[in-house]
Length: 110
Length: 110
Image (tube, rainbow over all chains, first blue to last red; front, side, top):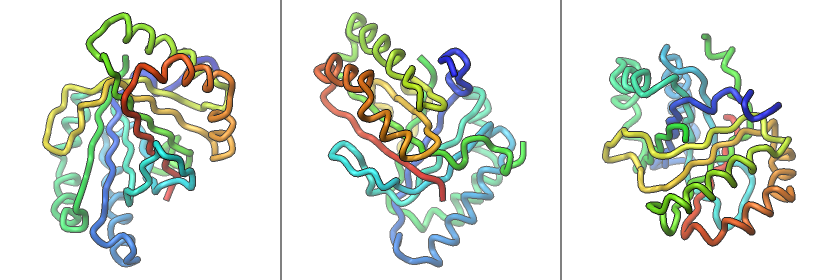
């Protein structure tokens, strides 16, 4: 596949990393994963990936987070819709108490 | 689009954030961007996004990085091929002096 055929090269990338307060508790993980799966149903999301740290382990790799939420949008406007969407607000309301740290990286194409 | 039709939900996600030593110098940025574009030609990469911080700005957002490199692989094995690929080694050799911090998040699907 040539670079110019790559599919998401021009999208708005929203990548969130969550550090749960109790990452070792399965009921907490179940609740959080269920909520993440509902969250990515928001209609302006083009594509999504719900992840956990891979087994790779080098000095530059941060594998301390509990969950990764990667979602793509056509543009910032669609991301803005997501931010204030009732499903997103419900996610924060229901799950905000589960994490003690969250870091967001938003990126637009060069 | 329904969630089960999302395309990259099961992939290996490799997301790298670079903090350049001299992010304000255009010749440095040009060199780095050219090198990033060559880097993503590695054949085991399924998809890629070369980014800079979006205009979003909230407390949880880290927009201090200079460049974002997001690449997807079918699996860890394909990512391993990328890590030791001559084009990747050449990228590190030529550009490693340009950054003073790099953070990698590797994620696999839940």
